[in-house]
Image 1 (spheres, rainbow, N blue to C red):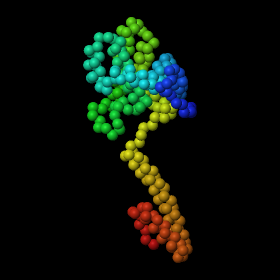
Image 2 (image 1 turned 180 degrees about the vertical axis):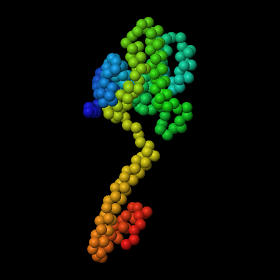
Image 3 (image 1 turned 60 degrees about the horizontal axis):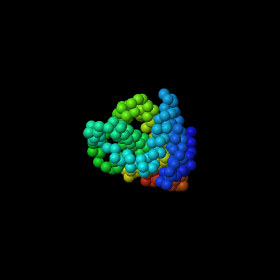
Image 4 (image 1 turned 90 degrees about the horizontal axis):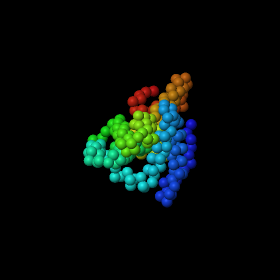
Length: 254
């Protein structure tokens, strides 16, 4: 059963303590996990992943995150790998891989647009969704690896990054549920899709009308055969005319 959450303004730039935003994100995330069929700790302990995702979603609301992430995010892996190869500091490498993995996770789960393109743009060098999922897993794995160099031991964040890499598809499904049911981010329907949707509805209406008119015709025909009166003939003629107007292939002569 869907849990209804009332409208709540979040991300006020004057809000210095975003606890309310975090509570909303965590609450929505937990309900989304149950609704998508991936409750917490179902296959392994992952309450720590909940905390990580809720913090990530909270941070995205505020401009500080965007300012920090902008310098690390790179749309093509070849640029990212070339950039990382020139960097000596493992902490910076860790930040680059983690930030890009987080960015792709949100693009896949929340925004359903990992290609970062407008719907009508030309798809040059676009990966499939599966390709973006594989790239995100790899980034999380690299981030986990560099975290060992940075912190010199296994840490809670390293565990979370590993769990995200292993179970990425389930977390994307959870965020997709959250996108629609709690964040109300709905994909805009294109003009072509709208045309086909309207045409489908019209076709259904036409078939229903045609079925009703055929029933009316059969009743009028039966009545005319029984009585043969002018009135019954007129009813039959009107029924035939209606059917021909909606189905030109229909042919009947009295």
